[in-house]
Image (cartoon, rainbow, N blue to C red; front, side, top):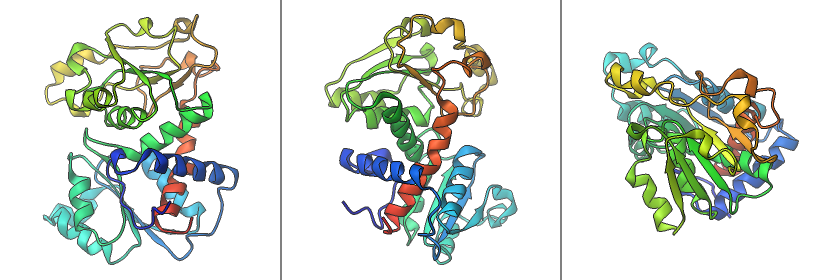
Length: 304
């Protein structure tokens, strides 16, 4: 299987078999993360929107493999502040680097930038649309904790409307015969366009407003924060911001093998007393991002 030169814009750009190959490579990198296989490569890390884990884990992943990293995390310190277009920024950057990793606040910006770029391109999140590398590390985390990706009960909780990590994960897990349990306020239900992936795969989903309804049978509880930055009306955010708060007492009666994931950052949707339970996996999940992003860059740059 050859991923050399391939872009990753949406999780649907890769097949089920290609996901599994990336996860296999990630396992290799987890065992041996420091390899100088990208020592002659330059990686662009350009973030038009705030990020902690995604940006730092990409840069850590590249550095551990010997690559040089250039880029920015504050677009106001670039020529964008002078009116330079995204087209020109990407065109120029393509002549400096071997691969571009970009986050942008506008849905569809990643697809547009990839069309302009003359080097491989990885989407690190575009607005409320897609976050495929987060999805890959979510798949890796599910596989590590459950021993399989097949036939699982996946509970997705919180902001299912704007949550790009949720949209990507639904698409990916629709390849593995999952049953989806969708927990959200009525205002933040999973969009119909994303539900179509479930329907097209002839899979089941149920919608809930009460988190406690799904805890007894869930294999994975995927918590998300209600994203204030996605609301144009602050009053609408205030209505739903504390809809779900998972605490340790609520976990009585859950499956022993159940694990809690979260793309982070959390606000208050997971109480800190959950951190010490055996069910909490979100910090390990974040660490898995380094290995998965190493696997992606190595495969796309043709060194693995």
